[in-house]
Amino acid sequence: MSLRKLIPLADRILVQRILPKTQTAGGVFLPETKLDKPNEGKVIAIGAGGRKADGTLIPPSVKEGDTVLLPEYGGHTVKLGDEEYQLFRDEDLLGKFT
Image (cartoon, rainbow, N blue to C red; front, side, top):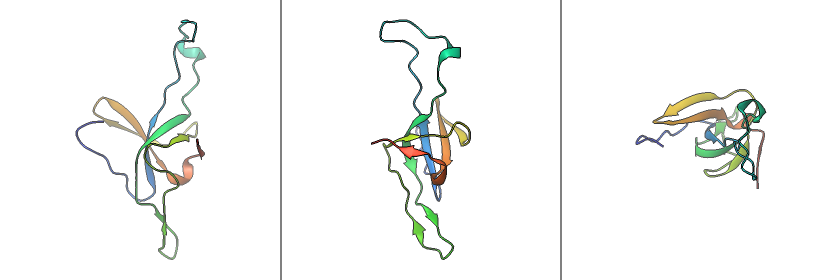
């Protein structure tokens, strides 16, 4: 990450996509057209959480370091230093790997 740390606001989650392997176990390099779009990511930072209509806090459903299942589309791309990240709302994440 860059020298600056991004802290997401409200129910937003900062995720770094986990890129698919470009080489098989046998050493064969896969062409880009055969690679799956990355749908897993590592949670880098989380906001404080969302709010219900009555103002009570809804805590985030994930924590830093969790591996999550991401939607195919969505999120906002954020570039920090040389790294690229995605910002998602907590409710847009599809699941958490255990």
